[in-house]
Length: 103
Image (cartoon, rainbow, N blue to C red; front, side):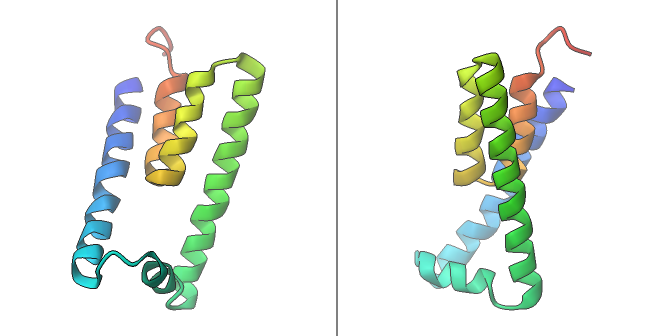
């Protein structure tokens, strides 16, 4: 499972980034315009909130686990979540939690 989590984290980083890069190439590097595009209709706004709530939930889980286990390296998954996305942060966190001896 550890390799699967790592593969999903890499996919979760690269695949969505392709769309962001494509958008920036056509629209220019304008974050305000991108955020406006995220809220273009009710469906995209719902998706933004879904991902935001999932990201906050993941962040709370990671912080709790770090507090409990003192495994500070888990905090890097928070950076992956907020700078790349939940599609990278969640599988990366699961990868970090899974030791080589776990089944």
